[in-house]
Image (cartoon, rainbow, N blue to C red; front, side, top):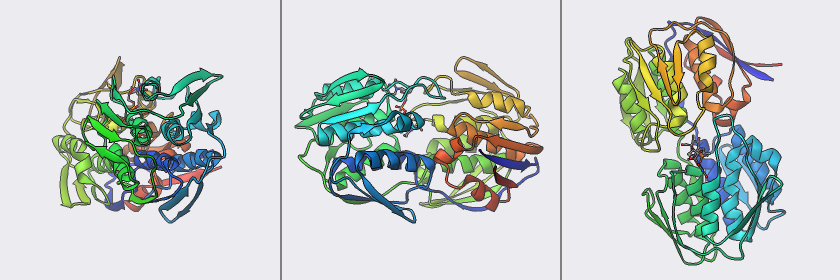
Length: 420
Ligand code: UD1
């Protein structure tokens, strides 16, 4: 089991330049989209994180050939070896569900394990399933698997009852090869959804309303290959911005999209962090001695991302007063709080709200994280906690952060990975 050890110090000031990797949440649907064509898809700026290798294993089971050179992935699915995504892989990464729509649309059949419980609350996939049924698929749930068949999908109008990033992506991919026009309403408008649409358009899809809540897709009979660049990871970038704020540091982020970080930047500025856009793809964040408390509520893009909630809670433990953080996207997404309490944080949870007391010195301890962003928050806390903090079960962190400890080390953190 690998662990991360951090020797923290409240006087640490992170300083230097860090390059942000490609977005995990953009590359996963882009890889799934390669199922929609027999031709080769090339994806540039892919992050080398564990979730990418997991979805590539799913894709290999399905018949894909792929190779990665530096940060460019070439992937091709000439035909399927099987239409089944196994339980072992799907339960280790929910986003495997993204193969459902494309498999069904191109091959008329898909068998995907039901993802099951998840460390950040119950995460149903009913909206994916209802949407595909509306497109004409027959779907049954048997022995823990979703069995979907459709000779041909037929365009129709579908309104998502609730915003869903993965559901929007699955249905956009499926309807790209459906007969006739599909109108999707109440779509998620996350930058990762837009990045996927732009790839699909390069592959020959006819999509109107990209980036809007209503998207119209005119199905085509086949899609072709394309070369596409994955957008920078706004959550990794946000995590480094918080690291600078928390350590009163001075960090320059390169290869970022500042426009994807508007809400996060606005909140950090409110708390006193100076953030300067250096050009279209770099930002400087200078932490202030005094951190102002604030109330934050997570919501869909362009609102405050749930994937930044845990990191902000850590920042608010150092604010000059009390803050209330409300989580509206996922239930039970406060698992990091119990660990932060062990570091000395004073946080009370009531339902979907966390009351975070500021001005609280943290002291290092052994911790365990149950999900990706929870792990990141513990690493951040470890930077300013006195003494040694150990984050166990580092595989959660590795799912979505490329070389987090090496990047932090280059900024002056005393952090190392322990392999035993
Ligand atoms: C994606 C992101 C994840 C992020 C989340 C919210 C990827 C790979 N992951 O996850 O990092 O935290 O968006 O921004 O892109 N829901 C249903 N029924 C469904 C689908 C979703 O009720 O069929 C609910 C979920 O339980 C949750 C909410 O809708 O409460 C949003 O989930 P969704 O946007 O689908 O999240 P993911 O796509 O799984």
